[in-house]
Length: 480
Image (cartoon, rainbow, N blue to C red; front, side, top):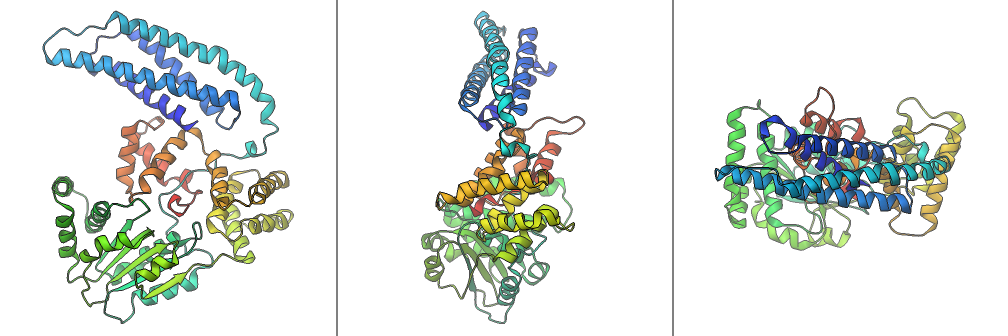
């Protein structure tokens, strides 16, 4: 689904670009405009049918994706050929072969719209009423990081303990580990500590890096340098000079060796009281590759890690380890109720069923937040909640260890189709680095994933996708 939609969006942007008067390309504009109209029709169809899942629909989406990708390759090649001829001073003309290909492509698109699309619309219309999750409104997408404004449910005491350890009187560099299974809220708790006002006041320098299983020491160091750079610039207004300096530093970093980058980090941290957070730690080798660049200034500097593996925390000789615990039934219900109703409170007729749903999530905050996001956007009726309970029963009856991922699939399935490519792209890049809003926004613009909105630039649309309410109900992918 997401692949077909992304392919159509990319093709649509390409067609709009070559139709722009500034391009001055020799093309059959009537043909290209006709093709663009067909692409938009297919895009609208995918939006209308985004919650339909059966074999015929899957086959159609696959064909749409293949056709769109192939078309963009041919069009790009033809445009490039014209540009090269223009540079050489030769006359660029639209070839007969390209015109024939475009006409055949238009016919292919018409076939998809008028034959298969119409037949699938007819066959799926009867299925819609039987699909329990179809009653859900789109659930919204994911922020790259959990909610920084609220302490996680059930973690107030741990947050206070960590804060005391961070700002305690022990002068030597300490390693603090937050340990627990995937989805239990390690990253959420670490973010709450990292963003706490007292943390920002106490430490001269803070930096966050995401490690993950497939780590790169160079990327970790670059991410730390980037975070330090950005935190400095957050203190002053943005200027053209600062942007030029950023670009210069980026180019400078690209020619430095890993050791030279590490030495640069060491120099910046020397003499400073710093907090480094390394999220999603999997092996001691990652620590061995960067530890030499994190000096012990004997002034209360701290390193905080999150990991699923208790033996990794022990191998790091961490001064203190905080093991995350599952939420109890009362805490689970409090979290679910907050995500679904906020301060309004749960209607009495849904309370017992709601508590059963919360209990089914087995104390995993990530699962509760995902289900809460779905229920918050759905009709708040017993029928919908019973359907949700039935889905959870099906997931947990399998005994699969990946239950949390199955619950997240419910949330992903109910995203609007135009957000799915963006969500997958963000999940892919944020797994390897702590991505920053402006970088992601421009990346989404460049990849052609965005659906244009009237009176808004593509960058504004991207920012809305990332920080708007649409991204408020899915938890952090790094926790899965």
